[in-house]
Image 1 (cartoon, rainbow, N blue to C red):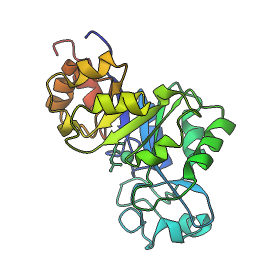
Image 2 (image 1 turned 60 degrees about the horizontal axis):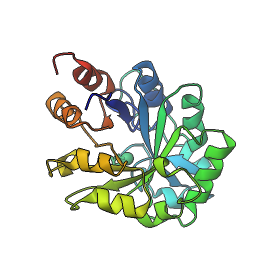
Image 3 (image 1 turned 180 degrees about the vertical axis):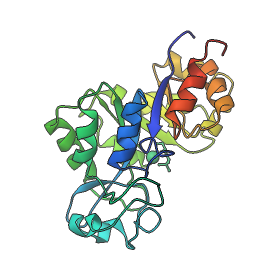
Length: 246
Ligand code: G3P
Ligand code: MG
């Protein structure tokens, strides 16, 4: 296809620093990733925070559900999570994250984690923050909750809406075209139909698979013509897809 495959750092460059934290975002910038993917949820007092799980149990030294904890309570927890050389890592707000990326040209894929906890109205708050920071053109919104993404239609550019798909949806480019989304972000294992990327392309739909951590998978996907590869290892996977022999 001849186009350049972008590399997006998953949860920040989460192989190298605690996922979804400012240190991981800084590594992604240092590694010259073309973009970053971050997950957002909402605290008990209405702050948009960057965290993957609905609880803080796995990634911090605290326990509890994000939806039940205030920002201050969340900030009391440490997210160092065993990463050597890191200390006192706190949960970032969406603003903290965007502060890191605003001076760059990186795409920021904000994944709304609102499929388990629905966080009604969360899109409005996320959108408000992005607009206040003047980053509308830099941000792509994704979610497994397509009802939530539907709330963004007409308020953000079509190209900035990406439908997350985890498994075998058939002909998803037809759905994306009908839905009014500019991209499909599938689990890379879900790219089963041989013409997946070509047929998406015909509809003007980008394809950004995740989470691609093996070089051989990344090279195969690049050769299929995907637009961005979302990976925990933006340095190594980036090198693999840019290698002239592949
Ligand atoms: O947005 C791509 C990918 O992050 C979706 O899955 O569980 O890693 O957020 P997950
Ligand atoms: Mg995610």
